[in-house]
Image (cartoon, rainbow, N blue to C red; front, side, top):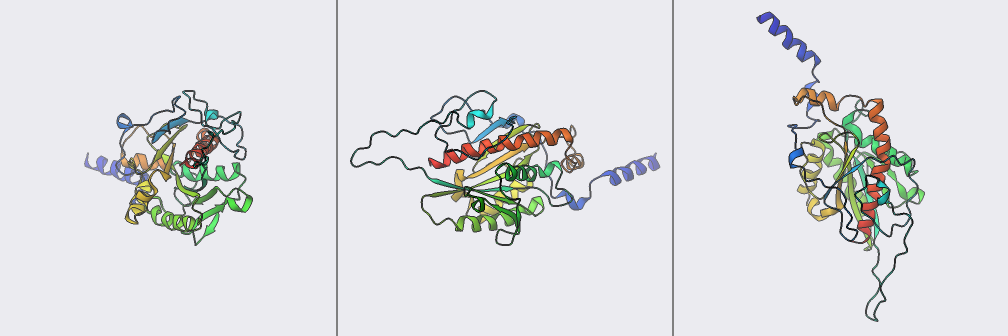
Length: 307
């Protein structure tokens, strides 16, 4: 019996993920679904979207360059087209008194960052944020990101190069659990370029969402529970220590892309799952999710314009 137990233990160690990589995965995986405060958009067009919202993936065929958004219609429908208003509505201002002037829309500049692991884990579920970012670059007709020391050695794509100044894309090149330092440097470089008082800057982070089913997009604003995600933990801890997180407030935006989870809650099983290659079916959902994420980003730009 002792020999059999020893053989089984040896086999488990052979099949497990190397300990070196374990610190880059989710810590203390657990089912938080009963405590999840995520809600859906409802038909209250004058109210801001809730801090934590869930939107299903859409099957939009393409994402066209952004029109001027003048109205955000919320709906209980699962169709994300409501986030991109159509037909466009003409913004009307109330007649201004001699001492009043019409409300002025702010100019928005976004740093959209993706968290994940470097090679050879680029095509794994844990790097879903990177997959979405690359899809956004293609949908927005931006060049694929290239390495920049100024931006924390991350991969950067500047929308200003192609007349899309509201977008700057940044891909982390660090291991997940230490991605905060590089992103903080990138944020300081990005924010320092915006000298105009009428410009609103915001940080939007794309990451994988273990507790969410595939085909789900979650939106959170401000500091909130990382739900065991070591990349979000690193970012929030680093930004908080630098007194940046509180200053950002609801301009710190997180978009989680659901990847599902294994039945087992064992750490090694969860690690093997998130390090597993994205299947053809999962990749199809992620590719469709690019358009859903783009629609959510558009709604956030509309919100920030009015801030």
